[in-house]
Length: 224
Image (cartoon, rainbow, N blue to C red; front, side):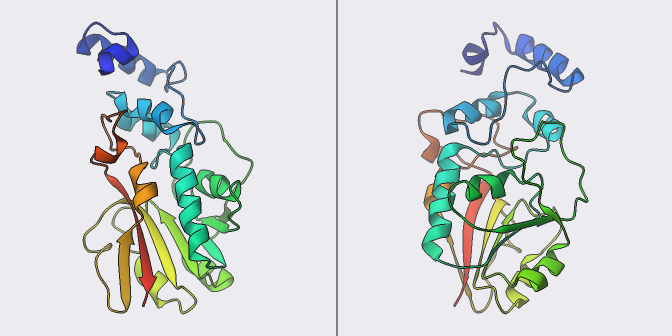
């Protein structure tokens, strides 16, 4: 399917072309990422053989798309929790798509990781602040964290912050960090989870997104 999609005659031809794109930092790659594109349009990115180098180049972890954005915004609104804080907000794309759907939130990042080469899709830039300082400053009821840095567990600080009634984790599940904790319950947010795409999702069934085994999950944790 990938060969037909890109018009190649062989897997090797596809790989050779992608290697050439990679040499040019994918500037001449016809596959372009738009956080507000339809799910199927952005799922094409997951058909690249060099998916991870593509995402590394552009600083992409969660591949946002219109259906995912709509579903996540709807879930956040249903919770009715305010203030809302996004931590580790990176280039601000997630905060921007949520704000465009009427979700009022603050977003912070400590900019420890350099941004990708992709042109910005929004004029919003997250505040330069450590997440712990932001928890103190904004006293959020809801915290959103997409792709927490590997090897880090910020959730202990979320739970220790008295104002926090819930937090949403988006990313690759860690059984320890994403596990059960006394006084808290968790559930998958099924609709945004259905449309989740990420840098690890090599190959996607365009017709049956709900059947695709996704690496990036969307889970809500609520204080009991």
